[in-house]
Amino acid sequence: MVSYIQGKLKFRNAKLETKLKEELVPIGYEITRDDNDILLKKVGKVEAVLSELVPICERLGWNVEEDLILMEKPEDPAGRPIRYVRGKIHR
Image (cartoon, rainbow, N blue to C red):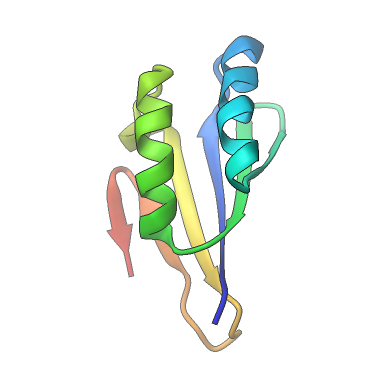
């Protein structure tokens, strides 16, 4: 089964958003923005996405425990979503 990750990262400034896109789009992330957040989407598992995102976000200056929220949505509607909030994975 394929899982989809949706998440948001607090928007800081356009320069950081551009740097983030330059690193994440080539490895399969879809990135958009609303008024206050950078929105992220990718096919994968929450653990794999965290292992990619955390080093990049921290290097660019984000505090992932405060600034990042992720939700893994399983393709199967009967499956439960898995959330990453405040530095912890909630199953």
